Amino acid sequence: MADVVEAEKSVAVFVGEALAAYGFGAGHPFGSDRMGAFWRDMERSGLAQRVQVVEPVRADDSAILRFHTPAYLQRVKQQSVSGEGYLDCGDTPAFKGVYEAAATVVGTSLAALDRIMAGRCAQAFVPIAGLHHARRDAAAGFCVFNDCGVVIETLRRRYGVRRVAYVDIDAHHGDGVFYAYETDPQVYIVDLHEDGSYLYPGTGAAGETGRGGAIGSKLNLPLPPQADDTRFYAEWERAEAFLAAARPEFIVLQCGADSLAGDPITHLSLSSAAHRHAAARLRALANQHCDGRLLACGGGGYNRANLAAAWCAVVAALLGEAA
Image (cartoon, rainbow, N blue to C red; front, side, top):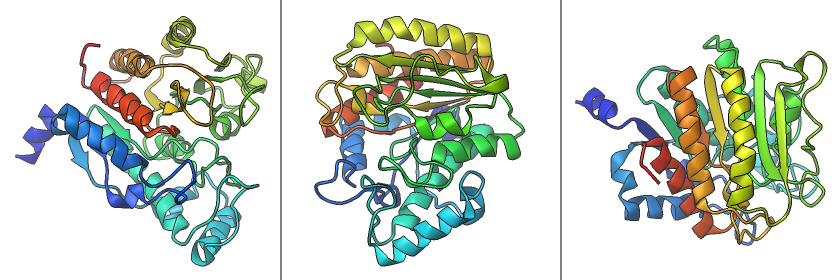
C-alpha cells in the first residue's frame, strides 16, 4: 500500500521538529519558527494532503565530511557542547545542540536525494535547508553545514552523476557553493541574487563565470535593489537557456524567500509568483533532461508570511499546479 501512495504523490516534503530545531533563538532572523510558518500554510491550502510527508534524518560524520574539513567538523562539535561563541564573524551563533541540528539539515537533504534517486518520488522539498554560505572549513551567514555541497558530492560519489545544475534564487549570492565549485566545469551554477554592492556577501558579479577550465559553466545574474517580477522573468529567460544548453542530470534548487518584497534584511521586490515560475520551469527542464530529478531546498527568508507563500508556491509548481 505504501508504494501505491508514493506513486500517487510525486513530491516528498520533509518536516519535523528535529529539522525545525535549526535556528538561532528569539530575535535572530533565522529562528526555529520558520518551518512551522510554512507548514501551517501547507495545511491551510490543502497541499499537505497531496504530498508525501517524510520525517527528518540526521547525517553521520562521514556524510558531512564529503564536503567539510575534519577540523571544522570538530570545532562545530565542541561549540555545540558549550553553546558559546560564534561559528563565524558574528552572524552565526553557536548554541547547545547546534551540531545535531545542522547535521539533521544535511541528513534530511540527503534523505530527500536518496528518495528521488530510488524513484520513490519525482521531486522533493526540504524547507529548512539550502545553507549555501557555509564554506568547507567555516560557517557563514547563518549556515553551519552546507547541505547543498554535501548533496553535490554525494551525487558524484554514490550515484555517479557528473552534470549537476545548482540554481539559486535566494536574495543572497550562494558563495559557499559557488566558490567550492568555481573550477568544476560540470557543476553548472545559475544564481539570481541582489547585487553584491548592496547586500551580503558582496559577491556574485556578472563577470564571475567560473575559473580555469570551468569558465562559462557559471551564470551570475545580479539584480538591483527593488527589482520586481518583471525583471526576474527577463533574467530567467537567460537562466533557462543556459540550463537547457547544459543538459544536467540532476537539478538542485535553492529557493530562498528573502527575495520577496518586505523581507527585513534584503531589498528585492519579488512575489511568490517568481518562485512558482522558477520551480515550474525547472520541473519542465528536469522532466526533459533529468528523468524528473529535482531537489528544492528552502534557503533564506525572514518574513514568515513571505516564506510560507513562496515555499507553498514552489511545492504547488512541483505538483504541476497551474498558476
